[in-house]
Image (spheres, one colour):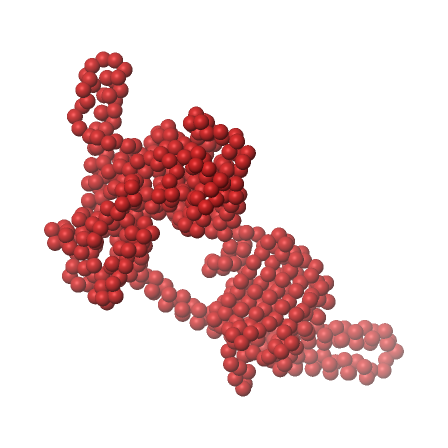
Length: 594
């Protein structure tokens, strides 16, 4: 259905978020700086356009990086060499690098999904090295990547879109003229059209799969013999098939029901309208074409100048993405997700805007209900944590005040016995001493009375002394000299985080040392637990930074304690060790310690 997307089809695709560029970029020109996508049906077309793009950059003294499949890297090298590019020299100079797409993809993904931190680290290193060797470091680096195509081909659509977004951000921050490519075999069914629109929406320009500058009657000589006649006939048949494909695509866009897809002129007046726009917006084409698109905005946003501001942002940056309330023709409101894209010609002149709108009112309502449910769960979680702490406190006191007293009485009774077998009595006394010590330790760990009576400044050194004896881990403690008492909840939360962190150091890190830092400012309190162990795996670290809670109950409890007190828990890890940093805002402590 979509195998031959032409320049005119690319213009239609602009309505889904891609500005029009209906020719190959024959040279490397800063005007084309951005994120361009090429759709292709023939490798030769892709390599030819790519060789012009990369070759132009290298001729002008700029750097270039290519992340592609082995087959495309080999073909591109051959094409660049054929164009007279001294490729070996450029590689030796450090101005050109080509990397394997599959290998690079494996370096930036976690569980099949691109990781922003890994992506930025890998790409920064590669691009910085090339820019440092460029003859014009201030000019953009030319880049081509096929990692998104690999994800798309594997059916990982959301992962591919996420990688496109990471590329967008990276290109803007690092001045890269970026190009990626998709084989049209991924979009050869009608149901793939929405995916095609999604791909277009993430780019500032579209290079169509073929370029055809004319369409008309069969050329002269197509009925004659000879190679030239057969070639002309073949070209004419290809153009006819292309025209038919474009017409099917236009009909499809016109009949899309789930998206409002329409065009605006440079002033913001509507000049095209599809069935989805009629269904979502509530206007027939005859009612809306020629009117200004500001009629879709609520009155308060019109008064604030938002419609004109949206156009200005899209014209300046190429596209503008937003969510908000919009108004239907009958005056009712709906919550919309929208993309507004500046449509420019090959010279960079503004020709209008493409807009895609989707009604997400139902989704927003579901999210609102989920937030309410989450709020209820947070309250329940906080209640459970408080109940748990109170129960620990009760058990600790009962062990200390009841069982501990019974054992002390037992020891006194044993000490008063006068029997011949003193060795057995001595053994009983030793067991009683050990039991008393163990009960005291357990009761203090459940709820240390020193924490409640004297605060963190006294409770932490006491706890660390016992922990160091039990674990053999040497601990360095640094507490701000003027550290004052906090609220009871804050002190308990920080103490529990200290306990859990040190337990993890003992069980998992293999570190023989640890460092504890406790400090405060007028605004916040900071607790840091640092070890020099083997660190946490990337997968486990990413789980601690999400809400999945898959890594462990202890870490979930630490995170939840911070949330309950409007604080923050940050965990960083490498093969040199792990640091847990808890931050709590300072709140005034009441007279009873709450």
